[in-house]
Image (cartoon, rainbow, N blue to C red; front, side, top):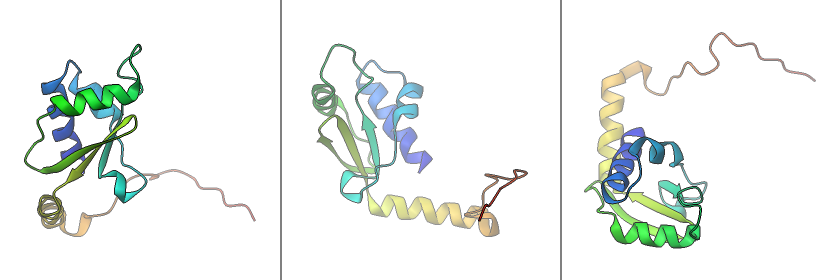
Length: 117
């Protein structure tokens, strides 16, 4: 999914005066599927404008990459929907390239866990 976040960040930075790295930091994964696959909260993008208006203005300016099906404004959020066939291709490629390592992580490695009862 990081691949798609980078595409969205680049698309936004090409369309508006925002740094791609800053946008990448702000992008998040929505908690509900009807809110898209990637979401941009617009709260911190402008100190003077209403975040909802920032989202609307950004949506008008953005040229979506071909991998993104659509972008919708929902309040102060821009929600991006990835084309399912593009997502399937990317995940399949990742699985083939990582083989038995796919899905594994080093998160928590060498850390202690305390379980109390």
